[in-house]
Amino acid sequence: MTGRESGRIKDAIQKRILDEEARNRRQRKALEALEQDNFHEDPHADLVMNKKIPKFDDTKNVTRKRKTRSAEYFKLRFRKNFAQLVEEDLNYNPTGPNYTTAQAPPSCYPDRHFCAVCGFPSDYTCLPCGARYCSVKCLGTHLDTRCMKWTA
Image (cartoon, rainbow, N blue to C red; front, side, top):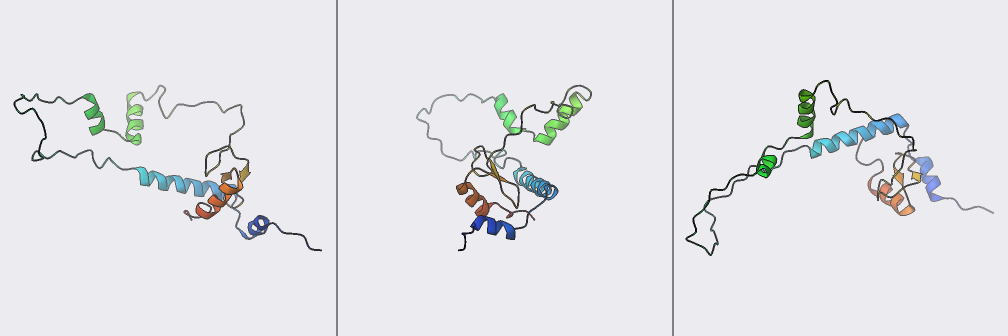
């Protein structure tokens, strides 16, 4: 009499399991790739409206007031990225509390773990890559789209 085998256990034996150092290295590479993708200036910040565009105003004899630029305009026009803000904070107050010197004590509560697919609390960990998942459906999504896919 032969027993049934679990497909997940059989597949897990064949897959490569990463140690904690390799997982951290892959996670750092993925974060750096995201930072490179997200770091760009607003492409529409310097757009200027063309003066030849037809104006569809019903009032033709109204004197036009000169538009003053609000603070919001300058906030959007001269927006700073995160690195510039940290450097400015460090230059403004080099000795006192600033972003680089801020610290908080470790939490007295255990870490909370969330599903890498849906964001719900998770109890399970993927064996090859260490990502968290909460259900069999999220495990399937993780294996199909995320597990060991995008970083070397």
